[in-house]
Length: 135
Image (cartoon, rainbow, N blue to C red; front, top):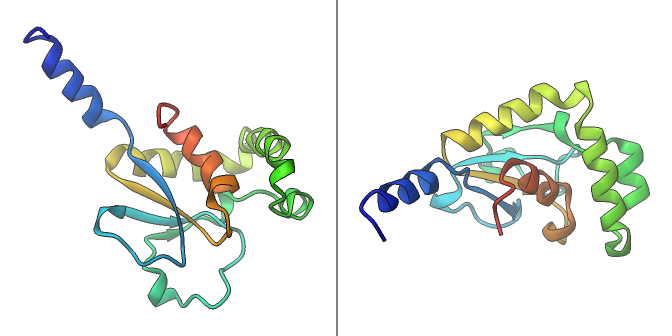
């Protein structure tokens, strides 16, 4: 590795957004950075104090129609993901997405959801959109 290659790699790692997905019912972690709830509905049994939110971004959540159709059925996830990405291209979501992109660029961002399986939630789709190089 050359001396020039080393610092470039470090700079790229620093500039890359750090976005993660967690369930809102998990205890906050110091590494969370900004904590943003991306569900349209408030999570059952969760107090606003216990949530430790920096923002509740309902505007970026899937439409009520899409949410009801999907019902977190794992078999429907690929189609849900496609439809949700299509919704996110609309002007109604532009400001909310811009805010999330800004938060992700500024430091760690944790997208919170009440879904039992966060890996097939809208938060995971948003993470892919905000940090496409994440594994």
